[in-house]
Image (cartoon, helix red, strand yellow):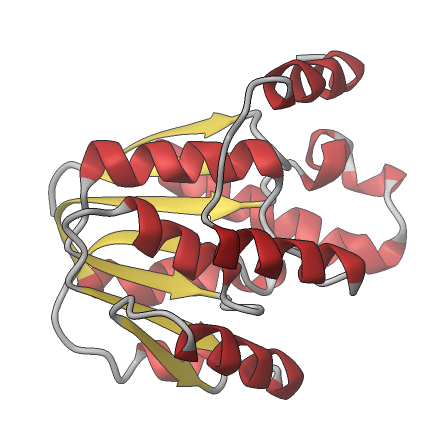
Length: 215
């Protein structure tokens, strides 16, 4: 899809109401006012759809930020037993902790570098949402593989990088080339690994969705 048309599509989709509960609306408003990155509006709608359709019992989120996406998933997932979310940035940890304290959602916030925290987790997860350091996506995939239940779904955000992922690396600023390379590595791995059925959806800033079909 041409990105100009993608913007028009986002405008069209936003003309249909997608209502959030008041607490989530307040978190979203504050995040936008303070320039905290949260998932984009059409991604919010898709994530809500996935929660209703898949009803995962145990969710893992890599990248809490202020807790908006965790609480959104919890709100729309009627079968949720536990949502484990990981964050390493102290100001965001404080704000997420405050936001979680006002909810009865079964959210467990773990702090520290995700690559370290993932090595300590036990059990399996039915749904994994990756929205953290983009240059670490291949590493996160390696670490979450043993944590996936049969039939688990992984959703990785910001795959399109506002269209930069489609450009040759030589056309990018040097500082963007590592992220470009790592995201392409992530997409290549999930798209070619026969144990996954994957696609990339041009929603928000691009969402790579992978279904774990076998070990």
